[in-house]
Length: 407
Image (cartoon, rainbow, N blue to C red; front, side):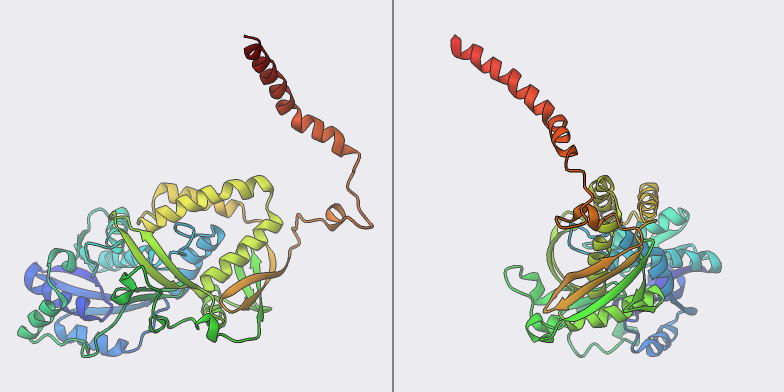
């Protein structure tokens, strides 16, 4: 009986060669799955035709933009999700979604394995492998580029010997990139020299701040329960809102990240990202939380935000702990409804106003002018009680010092 494997297929060199390798070396019929998570899909039809020509028994393309936004980006916004306080986890959020559909297709076609094109040095292998085993422990996971240790040139030669049609690789890529709705990652080439600024050629979504417009632009973002619902007063599905905001914020140079990152496999890696919408929305969301959440929640919530960021980065999106933390974050968002206005200018997104029907900011309590309703007579007693423990401790310690002095 023929075995079947479902391959995460991008159409690039590695996954094209992987189809033939899985057939020849592992004896699998290969079904390919291409996931649309908001990346450019130029040449998709050519890639699918190439997969069939190589020998894929079936090719499937699934549009995941809406699911990605509603099931992954929405909770990420509610959690202000930033790995090491910097990276919005664009790739890390996309991988468990793609892996879940690899499992779905594998179960539908009766496959015994899924495969992906990740290498042994990155984090994505963990995300694919762990997610697959979490959702269906019976499925095997095969990573040809991790198991079959060859250089790019050797892979090309291997494919040519077998008349495997390959994508156009005549133009040498300077950088390795990955894109989805939430961001664009840029690796390799001169990026690996952490002592130097990234070359301007590395960027595609954002203008250099010095070349950005000389006039600031105001952008208003409406939220309901911590999830963005409107952009400049217009209601939009979340994926469309993110897509449009990437263009608006990127035009002003907002969203560039240059980060030395700690990978799960134990190495530090210099990473460059473009995340215009992600950073803008998290900034706006934090502004609205500051207006609507109580002080104790605002102080405690970041601890769980960082834990969820670590779990997401490390491939544990579907873990019980991650589920529980997301539930906590969702429970805090009932009053995070309102509108935030930001000014975009030369690489920065700064606050320009926020409103909410659940605002805890009361002007009559905060004002120093007329209309002040704060009870000033309560301050003296409050300060006395607040400082009493320190007053008592100071008096006791003072006695101890006095005794030592007498000796």
